[in-house]
Each structure stands twice: as C-alpha cells, then as structure tokens.
Length: 295
Length: 262
Image 1 (cartoon, chains in turn brown, orange):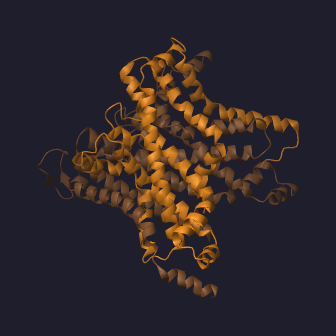
Image 2 (cartoon, rainbow over the protein chains, first blue to last red; image 1 turned 90 degrees about the vertical axis):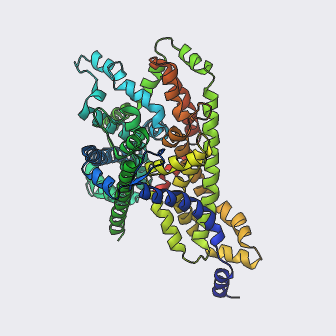
Image 3 (cartoon, rainbow over the protein chains, first blue to last red; image 1 turned 30 degrees about the horizontal axis):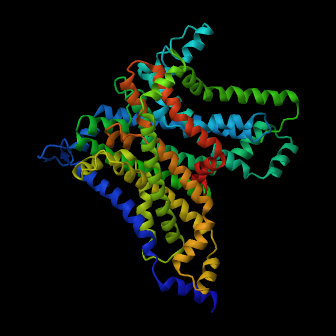
C-alpha cells in the first residue's frame, strides 16, 4: 500500500467530527447563545426582573450615540491603548535587549519585571490605592526629597487616568518583555557581529537590525493590546470605580454600571454589541497588518 | 544584544537596568511595608484568625482545577481533530470558534446573569467555571491546532498500518508529543482562572463560595479602615502565586509567550 492510498484511506474511513464536537458545542453554545441573547436584549427596555419587557427597537443604540459618558469611555479606551501600548512595548523591548546582554543579577531583574503579570489586579488594587494616596510610599519618598508634591492623583480626573495607565503598564511590561526576549533569541548573532564590525554603534544596531527583526512580535502585541484595551475592566473598576465623575470610565466598567448596578439591561446590551463590533474590527485590522508584514 | 567593551559602559548599563527595575519593585515594597504597619506581624495573625483564608483558597483551587481540566480535555481533542482529521466544513467550525477570541467577557454579563438566575445556578462554582473555560478555549484550541499541525502525519500513518485506531493514535502519539504545548496551555489557563475577578464578583455571593480575588473586598468589610490588615491579606494571597512562579519559571514564561508562536 502506498502512502498516498493510505492517506486517502485515513481521510475517507471516518469523520473526525466527534473529536471537535464537544469543544465546539461547549464554546459556540455558550458564546453564541450569549451574543444572540445580548442582541435581543439590546432592543428591549428591561430591568432584568420585571415581567414586562418593552421592545424599543434601535433606541438603545441611538441613546448610546448621544450619551456623553459612552463617548468618554470610548475616548478613554483609545488614549489608554495608544499610551500603554507605546510605553509598555518600549520598556519591554529595552528590558529584553539589556537582559540579552551579559549583566549581573539578570534573573532577579527578570523576576521583578515578570511577577506583576502573574499577580491578580484584584490582589494588587488595595496596594495601588495606598501607593497613590497621601499616606503611601510615594508621598514618603517625595517628602524625604522635599519635592513639595502632594500625591492625591486618584481624586483628580486627568491624573487618575494617568495613574491607571501606569498601573496597566506595570502589569503588562512583563508580557511584552517575554515576547521580545523570545524574538531576540532568534536573531542571528553573526548579523549583529557584522554590524558591529562595520562600525555600527549599539543604538544604530538596535534601530536597524533588532527592532525590524522583532516587527512580528510588535504586531502580535498590538493585537493583544487592542483587544485587551477594549476588555479593560478590573483595574479601573477596582481602583477608581470609573470616577471621579466618569473620568476613568471604560466600556467594560460602563456596561457593568448600567447593566448590573442600575439594571438598565437593554442599554448595557446595546453598548456590549457596539463593543463586540469594535473588538472584531480591531482583530481584523491587526490581522491584516500581520499579513502585510508576513509578505 | 548590546556590545560593551569598556568597564564604564558595563557599569552604566547595570545602573540603567537598576533604575528601570525600581518602579516595578515599588508596589511590592509598598505591599510588604504596608502590611507590617501598625501592629506589625500581628496583622497577619488577625487575618489568619478570621479563618476564612483557607476557604477562599479552596474555592479558587476548585475553580482553577475544573477550568484547567475542561480546557485541557477540549483543546487537546479539538486541536487534534482540527489539525489531523477529516471533517466536513472544518474551517467553518474553526472560524466560528476563533471569532470568540475577540469576545470581551463583559458581553456575557447580562445573558449569563439572567440565564443563571433562571437555572438556579447563582452562587455555584459551575456558574464561574463554565464561562471562564469557554472564554479561554478559543485561544488554547488555536495553540493546540498550530502545534499538532507540526507533527508529521507519517507517524500516524505508520501507526494506522500497525492497526491503531484514532483513539490509540491520540493516546500514544499525539498526547506524548504535545506535552510542551499542553504545559503552556495549563499555565496560561491557571493564571487566567486564578486571577479572574469579574465572573466571581458577579456570580458568587456568599463568602463560603468566593475566590481569593474577592478576598480584599471581604476584608474591607471586616476591617473597614485598617489598610494594614487588608494588605496583609493581599500578601497572603500573592505569596503562593509568586512561589509557584519561581518554582516553574520556565513553564510560566513559555506559557505566556505561547501566543506569539506562529
């Protein structure tokens, strides 16, 4: 029997459907049930308990488009994505490059950068609330240096958003770092040596060889970043609860506020559907960028 | 990566590294210092004496273990099916699962809230396990499929000629060869399920069912304004995670970077 006929034999003999069906039914069942349920809910005016459900058509969507808090949440998400993506990837890249060089205590530094990614935001939230309050360690440090700065950043709109971005960067640099670290291990050492022999300095080598070679990683991180930014919930909910005055509201926290806290289930569902469309668009766009890069 | 010839530049790089790392250590220092404020180590004793810490850990363990089991079984079998078996309309099934990759978990809030209430699943571990596993699976199935596609089909054909059926091939060829990706999947699922906050927040209402991520809130109720004890509770929650990470550093780093594997 030739390999060809054997392969054919394998393919035609029986279907592999039973192998994927349990997983498919489980995932698609739960997820598509939820999506269609949400879609239906988004056309209702309903508080979740009342036996009377009023069908309101598209008015929940219209309401969202005219809702300043919705736009605020969207704008926060965009700003949040751009800033955290740029800073945490730059830091991750620099850490990876330094730790690929021979330095002392490399493992210790690696652990310190990576530990934040494995700790739950929920566990760290009380720590950050203290750290960024006038009773915290930062205030002590500023006082010792006589800088005359008062750390009350969480109570002011602009600085509260910045603090949340700093916390997010703290949490996810380890992720960027690990991915860049893996990508840099693949770079041909001889190429770097040749560049150095040709008189290229460290900065030049980074910019012209290492950075372009890590492009695939950067795009993967962009995809994770877009979806991650749209999913943002734990950190703003736990640290500022979206406040002060919606300054740190994100789509996730707003959906929770509307749907669960205030029982506007229909309105929350409409925002959820918009969020889903945005997430899918984001994924498609970054995927396109990935394909362009691959060619 | 950097080429450093002089001692001066070596020391310079070491100092830059130190300066960059300090901000990452700062919250951890704050956590430990804060937890020792006021009555010092007695904070830990006070937290432990409430007797609830083991319950919260037990619940987190039950939930994480169940999610890992579900995710492992489903991603191994489905990954194998998608990569190696003939299935009519395979790519359609795969696409339908992949779309869920982008799904933010808040979208599940309202539907599951209403449905679980109807099914009397409120305040059960299952209400948390099922959505977390379903949200994790699209990604792990993708990882498993990509990995399985790298296994030569000739191995399976040889086994088939020797009379092995699909189950035996899965059991004796695929499972042993996919150990690296399986360990990444397990670590990734462990981190995500152990750290999950939204689902437990929503569906677990009584303290004897809640998970470690809800522990700070419980202590906020218990010790109202005593930050030091809340931080002691945070340290107690974080320590096992850090120990597991340090013991399995390589697996964690591989698991977290699995997403970048093409």
